[in-house]
Length: 180
Image 1 (cartoon, helix red, strand yellow):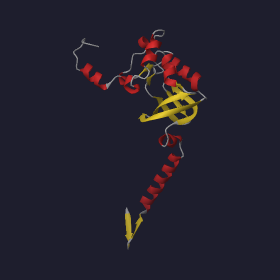
Image 2 (cartoon, rainbow, N blue to C red):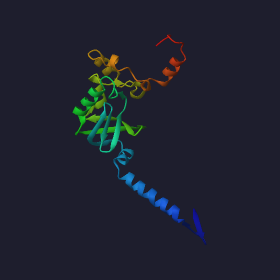
Image 3 (cartoon, rainbow, N blue to C red):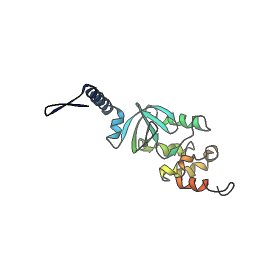
Image 4 (cartoon, rainbow, N blue to C red):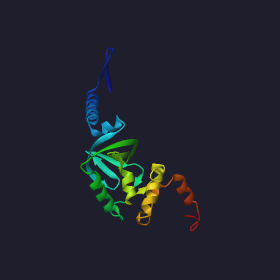
């Protein structure tokens, strides 16, 4: 790794190439939109793509809406949720506040369009569910109001990942047909 000549140390050629490559990779990352998120409180930009009801892209940066569970495209209401999101945000500037976590390739954030919480809007239209494990119940009342005039609760059951971990463990230990 290192060659010593007298008191001076020199980096070997293979290591020198690796360091240059790593330095170049760091420069590319620092110039990317992802670096803007990592170094600031908010990401602001035009929505260039809506993947589904709870995932948007700002440039090349994928953002998963925090605290919301929208149906997948192949599930009931999935396409409707995506289309509603497209009509609301595609081509418009949003501001997203990351919570510091990631979900697969996506930054998890609460996003706003002109001060409107996008997740709350989607839940209020009965096209997504409050995910209490991550929202801490932030959208509970909005979901309850939407449930009075939509079929979201019956068409899209709350995903397992939205339920508190302790509850799943407790349910797993129950005999079949008990509780629920």
